[in-house]
Image (cartoon, rainbow, N blue to C red):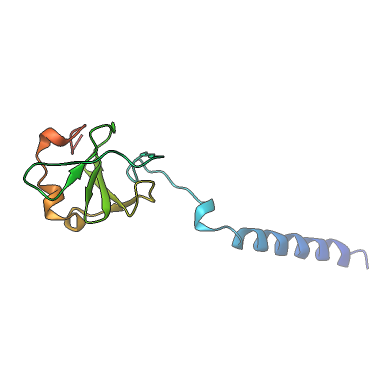
Length: 117
């Protein structure tokens, strides 16, 4: 009988660890490798101004590159493009091929920071 108690405790502890581990969600796990979603936090809708000659809008009062086109927000920093369905996010990294051509074609004078820096 004394041998069964430690074994039962070990099995119970292992089961508890397994249950605790499997309850973790993607929101609980964060991995930062230095490239990814920019730290843009907009708590109110930014003022948007049309980029002349284009269907794209930019946010002149925001310290980051923020563009609006066809109902979506776009930003680029360090060569990494991100998109959000709303000004408050959530932001998701996208490939350059997924950025609409009018957004990519915005002249550099409408950028707050260089696209590739």
